[in-house]
Image (spheres, rainbow, N blue to C red):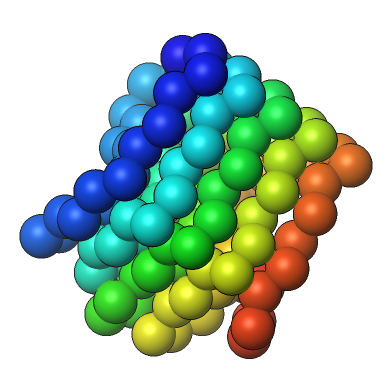
Length: 116
């Protein structure tokens, strides 16, 4: 996806974007989403690429991963901003308990525990 914008609320996971296969996002804004976990992005078992994306102001209302929740996903984020995301649990910006994401030249700014 290129130049996309997502703003949503979800009952289960992935307030903004649910990824279960490989995906590429370029110049996308994922803003103001909420879900029990994975407020902005929930990425399961994929190898997604995020280039120049803004993932901000998202919330995990019950548990972890306000901005992004990675599970068994080795994603790449380059020149991205994760800012002002919140989580009731861990990883306000990024939660990746069983993943190895690669972040290059990214801005991480939150009011709490940015990365778990």
